Length: 252
Image (cartoon, rainbow, N blue to C red; front, side, top):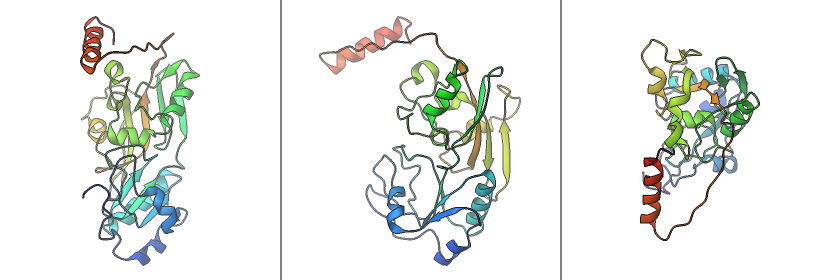
């Protein structure tokens, strides 16, 4: 689908079925309310048939099974800060919003982990960990608004990834819901569990394999200090040479 084009068909074959969505979830169908959910930070546009705001893993299970039974496209959405169209309803269907599942459930200082809901804001998680002397390294450059679930779906990187790595390096466990509503518990509090790396498989899969309802994050000790250095260059080439020289000198 080209940039800026609306889909030509609805993902819900029977619009009346929207009235039969599971009880307890909030459903948005007003065209004006749906405008906010037509795009992310990129150029793609897709009009959803409805937006469902969930509050619990049980809500997610019910909605996912509802959509699966009706062969209805289901698109998970956090804050919509991505630029690849991962949160856009390109073929219509249901947008599953995690705006109301944004809690940091707990931080374990001894094991250096945090368990969070998918709608938790990246920076808020980092600030919570910071009160225990820890931090969450992945920084997608939109950390003040991006969500952990979105970071996992896109395997987000950012300015700190040269030193610390991308999101996949800090996801130890996932609770996911499959298309039939079944829940999977993958990984956990133990680093590098002796099993297939299903957590790595799902991280970066853009919601095409499962829907995440909770994530176990690996935390690091917060550095004792940091500082920012700004330098100006006469050309892109000299700036690139400087970056190469800094890394070659061992400063990451």
